[in-house]
Amino acid sequence: MNISIIGAGAIGAAIARLVVDAGLNVSLANSRGPESLATLVAELGPLAQAVTARQASQADIVFLAVNWSKIPKAVEGLGPWEGRIVVDTNNPIEAPLFKPLDLNGKTSSHVVAELLPGARLVKGFNHLAPRLLTNPNAEGGRRVLFYAGDHVEAKQKVAELITRLGFFGIDLGSLQQGLLAQFPDGPIPGLNLVKHD
Ligand SMILES: NC(=O)c1ccc[n+]([C@@H]2O[C@H](COP(=O)([O-])OP(=O)(O)OC[C@H]3O[C@@H](n4cnc5c(N)ncnc54)[C@H](OP(=O)(O)O)[C@@H]3O)[C@@H](O)[C@H]2O)c1
Image (tube, rainbow, N blue to C red; front, side):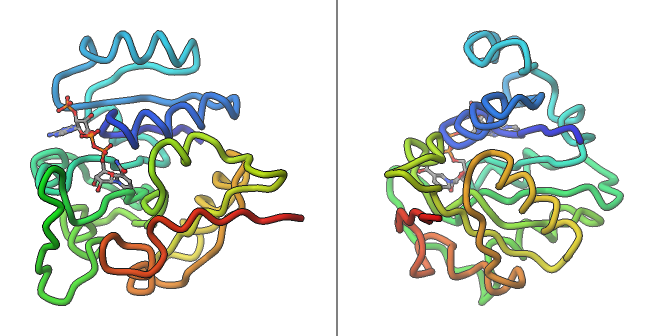
């Protein structure tokens, strides 16, 4: 299973750190090209490499971690997705104004899914601040990550990855139910929950 991340900012870099810490390879892409990622990739170590967004889009599991308004441009021309899994880490809001957007009753994941025809979208990694996301072990337990999606097998694969990265995953249900963890709409964002075994 190969893993990539389109978007190498606060969330993308945090996920990349988790992936290499778990001993897995990760490919990273941004808007400025692989050369601009040299410092980050060097910090992450030999399991990380910088690629183009097109190359990143070919991975088995593609994390999308791009500012909301820039997502259409970031995924433009990528694909065909042919059933590959895309983890939608995004929320429909942006710094510095953090003004909620009207998505005509759709969840942000449904909006993203429409941009990625043929991809199997799983919502996740979107309800915690990056500083919490980089640390799955907390207070003697495992930090909780929520995920949601309409494709059972894709969700299962993401659930296995969540466990491999050291978190405790909780399935919220369908993509529609992923709204519970969507910021600023749902009640879950910002909740820093820890599962004690
Ligand atoms: N930060 C949080 O607390 C937080 C928490 C949960 C979820 N999220 C969500 O995670 C997503 C990313 O947030 P962030 O805080 O990581 O943002 P960020 O630090 O600003 O990073 C955004 C990344 O997206 C890349 N990007 C922008 N346009 C692109 C394009 N056309 N093609 C490829 N890559 C492109 C940027 O690359 P360049 O720099 O090269 O343009 C940058 O690496 C957002 O949707 C946000 O809602 C954020």
